[in-house]
Length: 536
Image (cartoon, rainbow, N blue to C red; front, side, top):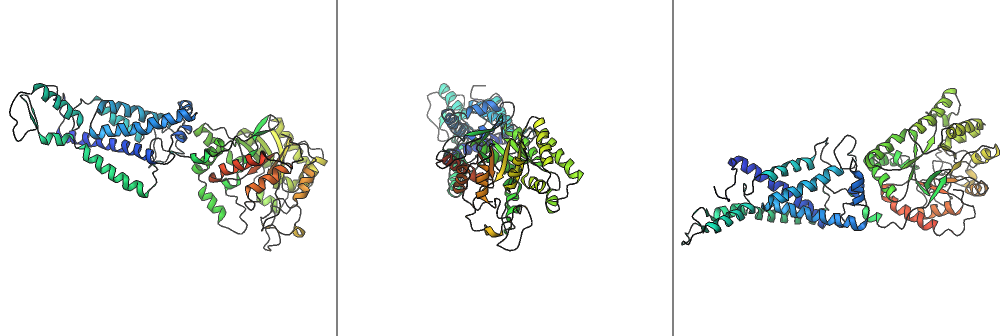
């Protein structure tokens, strides 16, 4: 047996199956590479940033610097193209298979299909341990051990040509042969068989051109996850931090209402349902990830929402911390009929314990609940709640829409670590007339009269807020600074920070995060009229 004859000759049917597998895997990898090359601003960095599993830190490191990330991108794109070409043509099949196994192995290890690890990956189905990357690795392992020249391809053509050349004798060529040797002849049919990959490349090129002409590429396997990387590149800097006691927090905090569907959409009754439909768990995780990478390190949540953040942390190694608002079960019923039963008090205290147990970084008493306690004269319960939170090692705050909450708390000598007070101006269309504004009417009955409250204002008397909070020597987190979406962020952020807020909490959808961070950076770097000292 000469060297051009493979050591193993599989049955024709098996040979055809193996040939199809080699070409199909090659087609897939080649097209993945082409798609990445032609996609504008494609980068593997988001995929690497989201890596999880035992080797997550290594993949995060690969995306840690622009130079290293660019090198990874080049190796990834052109590696896929080279491996795919080699497999389709059957050229250097063993080295290409080995390289493909390594590359697919990186994909697999960056996002292993383990339990609770696939929230961000766009896939066709559900995977556990075995996914497309692993299957293709096993297929390539077959070609790694298969003797070269077993299947149609350039490997066999080159091997036969080499053997024929070595054994050639001086003879007149016959019409039916390209090359004749004493040992074997290389016929035109065999040459065409071994060049079968060439027309397949033509088909792939034609199909890829048409597909790229009408559809933006978004492959769903390999290193294709994309956050709005171009937007992240537009960031103007890093958000400054303040502190609540020993707790460091970014000056801009991610609000949780939009995540939970609380849109404050006035009479647009469909908006809350729309937000809930848009903000799936996956979209919420994308928003958390984008916010963290943009410099926001804290999100305001309720206790029952904290497990969602835990899931995000487990899957991404994220470090987003929770500012948790505390309230009893049945809060809406209590706001309508504020009877403070023993059960309500127990639920309130239990919510504190549960939030701390779930790892909240800081706790504050929900504004609507705090207002009702102030109205009921139960400042003692506010004090008890503050003591309970502090005794467990957390900073404790008090929320409110009415300025009467901090006024009465300060007057009674309560010692919160900070206030979470709503704050915005009233220069927008849906604000009702000042003469019709009643203290403590936020989170109350929504009136049908446009000139009265209808979930449309959250700081009824902003001048009073400015005046009193200017005398309070505690950190102030301003929320509802955009009046539920009625005020542009540029206007709302500047109004809040210039008039004394130490932090701003704003609800953001994923596509608003980078813009809002840049606005906050611009505002914080150009404050001219702030008179209240920073208390954090």
